[in-house]
Each structure stands twice: as structure tokens, then as C-alpha cells.
Image (cartoon, rainbow, N blue to C red; front, side, top):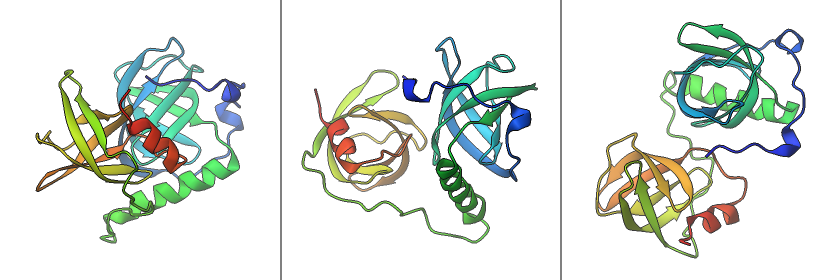
Length: 207
């Protein structure tokens, strides 16, 4: 479930007032929440630190507030600036620091295939204090697993089954997707990178 942060519930500037940024082509999967709290999957085709072109099953209305979680980017919020065929354009509301971080992420995504860059390893991997957790698939099937190592952006886990690449899963209480298979399990990438490793470890625990 996507959640709203009351500290960020402030009027956003109109699209005309937003600074203009250079968009890059992207293929980012994620989920978004409209004002009525309905959630839907989405895909971003183009994005800059100031706006995004979003392919979405439900477009909402111009001016409506949107909160999204995007692969590699994390939480993004703003207003629908324009309804387009199959989705909408979103004017992103963010601090200067957040925009700088987003620009760096988008630059890496835009160039990693062209320059044959390795997968992003910005987050150090560690062995958590609590290695036992559960994996739940979207259809409700639940499996016990063991955490091999984790980082702020993902985890490697020992698992008896092999969900297909790209399969959404919930590891502990964290939404993720399967990004790699290996001998004894799978690697998953968290939908939104966490700010502190301690938060990750807490969220991996079984209630």
C-alpha cells in the first residue's frame, strides 16, 4: 500500500511554474496512487527531475495529486499536468537535493546500456542480524527463506522456488521484484531503496 506523508502534503507549484529539465528515455516500472487512494501499476517512458511521461491504466484528472514508487528511483510525487493517450504527464514536486539525486539516477540509467556499465552497486551488501524471513507472491503463496545478504536496494535469498524474472514479491514487509536467479535462490530488488540499513533489517523480520 502506498502511503501519504502528511509532512509533504503541501500545495505543489503549477506545471507552468516548474523549472524545465531535459527528459531522458526510460523504462521504469512502478505503482502510483491517485487522490482517492486507488493504486495501479504504471510504466514511465520518459523522465526528468521535473516531470515524467507515465503510461497508466487510469489517467486521473489534470491537477490531481499523484504519489508513485518507481524502480531505481523510489518515491516520486507531484501533480498530473496533462492527460495523454494511455496515461498522463506528471509534474514532479521535489526539493533541490531530491532533484539532484534524481538527475544522477536518471543519468546512470540513460547511460548504463550505451556504455555497457555494470549493474549499480552503490549500496554495500551485508549479512543481516536476522536471516530468517518469508517471501509472499502476489497470489498469496508464502515460502520460508534465508537472507544471504542485503543492501539498501536489494537482497539475495535462499529460496526453494524460482519465481520468474520480474515477478513481484514481498520479502518480510518490503515490496520487491525478482531480478536474478542463482544456484540456491534468487536476488530481489526493493521497489524503493530504504534510507537506513536498520530499517531494512527491521522490515525483514517476521511478525
